Length: 409
Ligand code: SAH
Ligand code: SF4
Image (cartoon, rainbow, N blue to C red):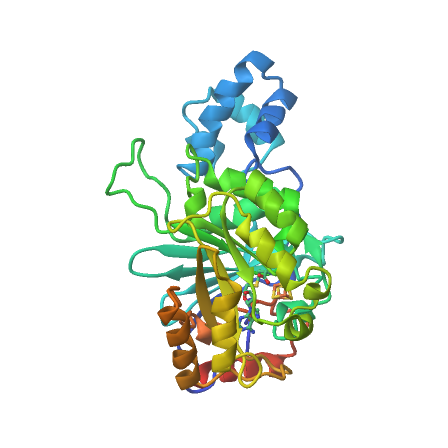
């Protein structure tokens, strides 16, 4: 028996394919630890625990690394460069389990959303986060989560309304990339690979649920596995971490992670930003912009992305646009204008399209790339700010309303 994620789609919303939502009873928290998502150090310790002497651990880790992160092995028997005995010992003590996919939805535009089930405090109360794959002509971007829920309360963001918060582990962060590659059959099939063997998941953005810089160590360790050139191999220039402005950890991210930085700006005065992004009261605009200016390695080819959600009558005047370019002056930057995605209970409206275009033109004429983020996956609620565990707080009626809102415009 399958439980649907949402009600039978109504007319006009029928396009998204829903591939079952697995019922809770089938969720069993893993008994043995999984090697999937482990760092090299953790893997070495795992080999140590089953008796591999220290002098051999590095080589074994290198071999396992290939199977885990290049070939995507799902069974220890595939790991033919390891001896039969070693494979048996691994299988007795570990698994190759991925995070559990509770549901998959595919949008008419090719966007895919996975509802990912993670262990909770009690075995029958798992947590859920979402992970979204967005195919484009020149790249495939995977949007991953860093926390279940978010402790911050940006007034326009749906995730911020969620009660439950726990940090994802590094393995759960890596696990989202692994499960996306599984679902997309995006592993290197044979040794060697070659140019023709391009990956579908070419970019990763940490713009899903949660504030990544409030889960710093796990995000750092997880992203370093994702970026490892001998494994998942998504280079740091193709990984973007988005923060609402946790100033002290921006410098740390530059030093210890080194991925591309995106900052959720959304307002040009402290007064308005205090309201939209309450964290601004702790780290006001001047400090935030200084941290951006000092982010290591910035150049015209490596720019900070400023995200700016377009809220009708709130932050979208042409004077705001001019103030925006003035504010970021001197920082190699691009400005990403995000049409506001409404959700039930939200008090904002998205700016009119004409206004977004005029706003964008001012930013562009001042010398900044100003792409408007095209809403993707709206029919499956995968667009920005709509990431929220379907079972957490939404009533069936709210879910339906959310879908309907997403489909009108
Ligand atoms: N917590 C981090 C990353 C996750 S949010 C951050 O705030 O940066 C990813 C982006 O989506 C952020 O820029 C966020 O401000 C934006 N966002 C949140 N809710 C939105 C909504 N309803 N419509 C459009 N963008 C939204
Ligand atoms: Fe949290 Fe980001 Fe949403 Fe703000 S916008 S509540 S920081 S997820």
